[in-house]
Length: 129
Image 1: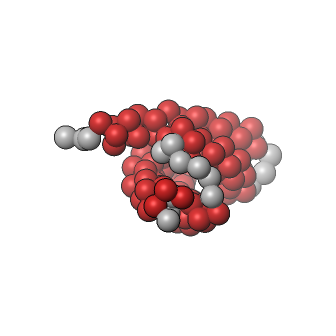
Image 2: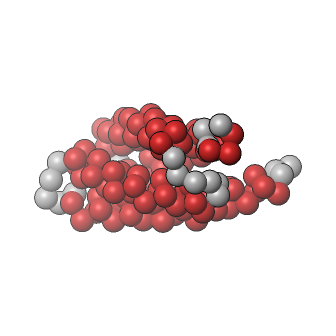
């Protein structure tokens, strides 16, 4: 069973995640017809990352932003970015359509990212210094 606090975090993470995915995919979708798919995917990721950090800190985990958790969040997302980009290219290589591949990536990357980001905010927040 999930503790009440953890359950709330998972629910809020889901809300923030849906918004971050919408931003990422929206930017990707707008750019993918005109520029390299990896560049479009990366630009979408960066725009989504910025919104995701602030929403994750303040809404999901109810922590203040700080250099420490910002660095941890960035580190987690650097790992997540390379995981996503590798999966994205793998799914394109096996024949998934360029508009479907990002969703296949997210099915793997989102649960992985939750565990890493939760660790960052629980262990690198101001309240635990």
